[in-house]
Image 1 (cartoon, rainbow, N blue to C red):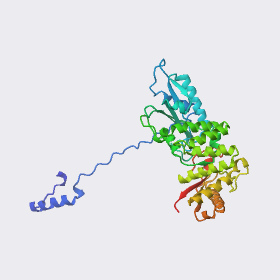
Image 2 (cartoon, one colour):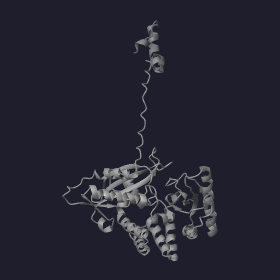
Image 3 (cartoon, rainbow, N blue to C red):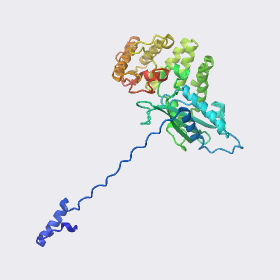
Length: 414
C-alpha cells in the first residue's frame, strides 16, 4: 500500500471497511501522481534524393545494377545480356529518352563489363535463358516520390531478370532532373490511338517497380516474354516505316498464345491504316474496341482545338476519328454495354476551366455516339475530371503527354 495514502485517526473496523472500498473505487487521490511523459523529438522523414543530370542518373542506376551481379572471370565465358526495351512506368510507352537510356547502358556494358555480351532482344536469343534487363522511366513528384502532382523529376528503375533461375537478381535506381530530357514518343507510341490497362505491360512494369533482388520474375511477364520479343520486332518495323513487315508480325503475335495484348491490337490497326487497307483497319479497330470493353476501359487520344470541343483540323491526325467513334458506338451497342464517357485535360491552364472543358468534350463525344447508335442515348453518361487523373502529368502539351488529353470510355453497370 502507498504509505502516503494511509488512513489514520479512524477505528479499526472503519479502516477495514474503507480500505477495500477505496481500492475498489480506484480513487486516484491515493495513487502516485503519474510522472510527466518525457518529450520525444519527432523524427523527420528522410529527405527525397536530389535529382541529378539525366546522363549521370542513367549511369548511376546501371552501375548499381550491374556491379551487384556475380560475374565470371574476365577470361571466362561471357554471359548473354538482353535488353527488353525500357518504358514509361505508368503508360508503358517508349520515347526518345528510353531509347537513349538503352544506348547508354549498352555503351557502358561494352566499355566496363566485358563479362557480359549484349545481344538482340529476340526469340532465338531468349531460348538460351539469358539475363534480361528491364526498366522504367517515370515522371514523378520528387518530394512525394510518386507519379502525382507536379512532376519535377524522373525516377529510373532497372532490374535484371535471370531466366535460368526465374529470379530477379539485381536492382538499380536513380532520379533524374527533367532538364533536357526528350520524352517525345517513338512513332508507334505517338500514333497508337488507344490505351487501357494491359496485363502484359503491367507485368513488365512490376518486374522492375514491384520487386527486389531474390524475388521471382513476375509470372505474367515471364509467360509472355517470347511474344514480347515478337512485338518488339513488329514495333521496330513500324518505327522504321516497314509497314508490310510490321503488319505480318502483329498478325503473328495476335495468333500466338499470350499475344492478345494492347500493343498487338494497336499495331494491327496502325499498320493496316498506313497501308491504306481501310477494311482491314476497320476490322482491326473493332477488335481493339472489343479488347477495351472486355477490360472495362478504353481511352482514345482525341485531340481538340485549344479551349474547344472541335477536333483539330489536321486530317493526318483527326482523319480517322469518325472511324474510331463509329466502331465504339457500334461495338458498344452490339454488346449492350453501358459507358461513362470521361473527359481529361492536361495540367496547363486553370483547373476550374480544365474541369469544365473536360465535361464539355465528353458530352460532345457522347452526342456523336448517340447519333451513330440511338440505343446508347440512355446507356451513356458524360463526365469530366479535368487534370486530376493525368497519366503523364508533365504539362508539356505536346505528343509526350497526349494521353493526358484523352477521352475515356469506362464500362459501367446498366
